[in-house]
Each structure stands twice: as C-alpha cells, then as structure tokens.
Length: 502
Image (cartoon, rainbow, N blue to C red; front, side, top):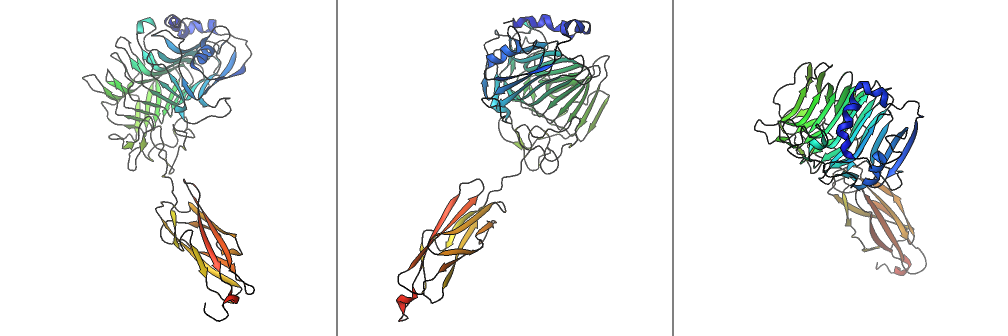
C-alpha cells in the first residue's frame, strides 16, 4: 500500500501545468470498469491499492458502494481513509446506496456511510482531464467523522470530509451531489482545514448540488471555513439547493466560502456559528488574483450577512432571518410559512436535480424549495369507517313477506380523515343467496355518512326454514391495513307464518 504521506509531495507537481503532459498516459484504450464494493478497506484498495487500480487501469471507473457503514484501517492516524490520484484523464464515479449485488440503488444518502472514525481525513481526489472528456463525481452517500490531526504531515488546505482538486478542460465535469457531510473535526494546527473543499482549475464545470453539511463540523485554525468551492481560469462553479447549517468554525467564515466564477441558486446558509470574537459569516467570497471571477446569487437564504462580496457581483431575491424549518438530523424540512418554501429558482444554472436530498420529488406546488430538502405535501389519510346500522358481527332478521326479493341497507359513519378519495369500501355477499345490487365499490370522503350499501337477498316463497346470508365489506384505507366488516342477515320463510303472526 503506498504511503498516504506522499500527498504533500505529489500535489504541487500534479497541479503545475508544465507537468501535465508528462503525467498523462496517452494512447490507452478507454473502456469501463465497474466495481461493486462492500467494505471500506475494499474501497481503499480499488482507489489506491497495489497493482492495477482505478487510478491507473486506463479505464473509466464506476464504483458502486453497497448500503452499510464503511470504515478503513488502511491509513495511519492523521492520514487519509480514501485517496485517489490520477493523471490519466479517466472518468471516476463513486455512488452509494446499492444493494448486495449492485443491481438496485436506494435514493437515501444515509444508507451508505463512509466513516473516518475521528482519526483520519475522509476522501481525497486529485485528478486531471486534459481533453475534457471526463467526469469526477461523488454522489448519494454520507461522509462522517473525518479529522485533520496535523497538517504539517500532509498538506495545508485539507478537508475533513471531502477534498476534490481537478485540473480540467472544456467539457470536464466535477460533481458532488446528494452527499451528507457531518461530524468532522480539525485540530488547531490544521492550517486552513475545512469540512469540504472542491476546486476545479483550468476549464470545465463544477457542480455542487443537493448536499447537506451540518452539525458539529468543527474547523480548527484561523482562516478556516466549513465549505470552500473554488474555480479559477475559465472554470465555472454551479452551487445549488444545498443546506449548510449548524456548523462551528474558529474563524468568522462559518458557512460557505467561494472564489472564482460561481453561481449560487436556492442554497440555505443558516445557523453556522464561530468561536471567533468577530462573529460568524454565513457567506464569504474572494476574487482570485489574476483570474476571471464573479459571483451571482439567485434566490438563496442566508440567515445573516456581515457584508456583500466584492464586485463583480450580482444578487437577486436573497432572504434572511429565521429558516422556519423543522426536523432532526440532516433533513430539515421547510414549514408552512417558511421563506424557504416554494420560493426558489426553478431554472438554476446547471438545472435542478430530479429529487431532493432524500430522494423525494424535487418540485412540489410548482416552485422549488430552497435548500436540499423539498417539503412534501401531507399524506392523505383516508377516514376511519365505523359501522352505524346494523352493528358489526350482528344478525339482522328480515320480516317475512311473499316478495321474491328482500332488500336492506347497511350504513357507515366516516371520521378522522384528511383526504378525499383515499378510502374505498368493497362489499359482497360471501355466503347464502343474495347480491349487492347498488354501489358494490365506493370511494369514501371524510365526514358524515358514507353512501349506504344496498343488499338484495333471495326470499324463499315455498318450503321451510330460513335463508341466511353473510355480507362482508372490506375497507381499503391508505397507510393502514385492510380491515373487514361482517354482517349476518336472516330472511324468514313466509310459508312458516300463514296465520299472519309475523
């Protein structure tokens, strides 16, 4: 296993443009390799193990992570749990939530957790793409409990959960989507340490979308921030529908820092705090020296603002103040009346994802919510149907007549529902002689009486004895088990009562 501490030495060479031609492995056939991975150590081997691995196999690599908790003992304390470095210009895609044979995928990013156990950095990717044909993506998983212990042994500007640094060309894509980052810490000597840093140099598109960075992500040294999105030269960054909240930094940059050409749509930067006496900035931005730069803000929610970023700069529909959301863990849901709800931009640069961070529909009520979580409509719960007349499991005796058919009715009462058309009732005679002649299946709305069920039973006009029939009504209620209401009916034989005493 290569030592993790070679990273400080290797990174400067990787990012020097003069060295790129020497590092590129030209002429290799571009094919695809797919890995179905079940453990953290297996992932480490595939990314950076001895022999052929994703970094040097000359193929596009698709790494599918099964559901579960991934840890790894591959890195030393203060090292890196999962490390990928390549100069081949091949696609690398890592996604979580897959089943045991990687044929189906859960849309819940909490289903696959890469946990660094508070000992090491989480995931680092360093790569280049000179022809603009590659994509480097991390999606649908949780990165937790990363720790930067001693920056001097690795490098400055580290990230406890996720670090991606790519030198690209026109067409290169760097994507982080549906990723949760939580529980990271950084020691006080971890210079410029942060939770996540994603940087695209040269050219191409960086997309940071539908991610959640929250709770107890503690940056250590002065000048730190929790999320740092950076582009330079001709690269652009598209940052949309992220929720960054409840984090703690030691500097005033507590939420999101950016540089280069960035467009921020529909993000929520909220409730991030700092141990610094100068307070906490939810958003920071710097203009890289000598590079094209510019920040565009569209329909973001930033709980508090210290100052506007330096020009060039444009801003539309920023809201501030309380988020008015609820829930625990990574998924905070905008309440009714929240400024986040139905107030985003439906056409952000880079587009909306099909689902929110939980895998639920992204747009409800025609306008997208701000942040990573879309408020879903309340579930329609069908009404409870109870018997009114006759009572369940009761026996009703019908009067003797000479008519060939006896008709009766069963009434039901409905209550406690909040939806219409969510409950259906299907009644049928299951024993004896009879049919349900009116409305054998009905849809039930909430409140008052349901339409009665009419039951027609054959009436014996000759012979002796009684005819019995059983009426069974099955109630199909949304979000509840099917339940059954049963009634018994007896039809008297009029031939038994010729003297008229019935």
